[in-house]
Image (cartoon, rainbow, N blue to C red; front, side, top):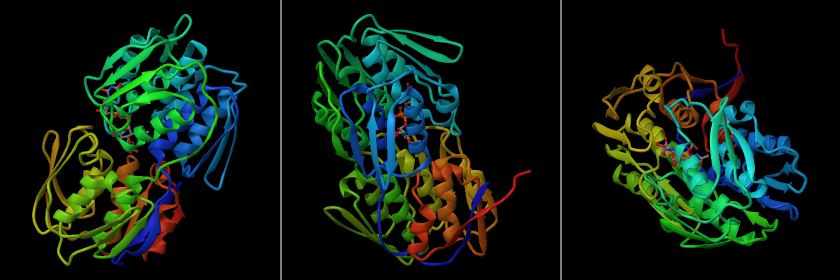
Length: 422
Ligand code: EPZ
């Protein structure tokens, strides 16, 4: 198994390019299942575990794929299965994204229920609600979602009771070839959903209201394979900026679209960082002393839950206490016990955390529990005295492309090593 060994204390400084976004790549790859017509060429696809798992799922379904140098070529003209197996869905919850396109294309699909996650239950009831609203009959049996429709799906008005990125994505992919018009109210505004909409439109879909919370989709008969360029990963960019902020450094991340990180950049500025932006890059210069900043994670454009753990690591160094609330995943706090083992002093109340600052951190062995928790522990290791070993970095590899190489380029003393678990 792999771990990252970090000798803390170096300032993180320099210029680095962001990779393609994981959370737009996954629904975009799923959308290739919508049409047998042609071969897709999708660029800036990050080479990370979740993408490799999704490609594995497409191969299992019978797609022809090739993936190198961040260019993914896909043809789904000869699919041979309509079932997403437990073994793959268990590895990656985002496999649920095949539900919409397979149901739309074949009128029947079976997708394993994803199972739990490190930060609490992650239900799929909204995904099922969407398919039923569009005319499907959905049953749950032996751990599988079995969805069927006679003929084509039929457009409907769907009002999401809470914002769901995944259910919005699945609804879009199911609706683009449905009979008639579908209206999605309270749709997710995340840039990754906007990217999916742009991809579907390029394929020939008709979607109005892109970038707003009300999406109107007029079903079409034909979609075609296209070339496309994925967006950059705003969460990776935010994580790299946090590495500069926590170590008193200065980093420019290129490729990132600043307004996609506006709420995070605002929090960095409130903590005393000097943040300047250009059209496609952000520069952060850390202050001598960080100021405490309270954050509440909410759906876009508010502070993203996927940056909550990273922010918590940063706030352990702030000159004063801060509170962190997560309104998206109330239990996304598995990183707290591990941060406290490094010397942080963080109290958990029901769904909020009180971070006492500043606390000097001292390296030791810590365990990753999920993707962003492992990023948080890497950030803490960069500022901790002595050596931090972040174990089970397979969590990190799910969502970051060669992060230790990027951090080494920026001056970190970090290396990957093998270890045995008892
Ligand atoms: C996406 O997950 C992201 N994953 C997550 O990023 C991200 O944290 C999340 O959106 C929120 O921004 C991908 O895009 C692959 P949701 P998703 O549906 O779609 C509840 C990372 O670190 N809900 O927006 O699964 C749910 O429990 C990952 O890159 C239901 O109740 O999230 C949560 O409280 C982690 N029923 C809220 O909605 C449902 O059917 C938002 O979840 C679906 C969701």
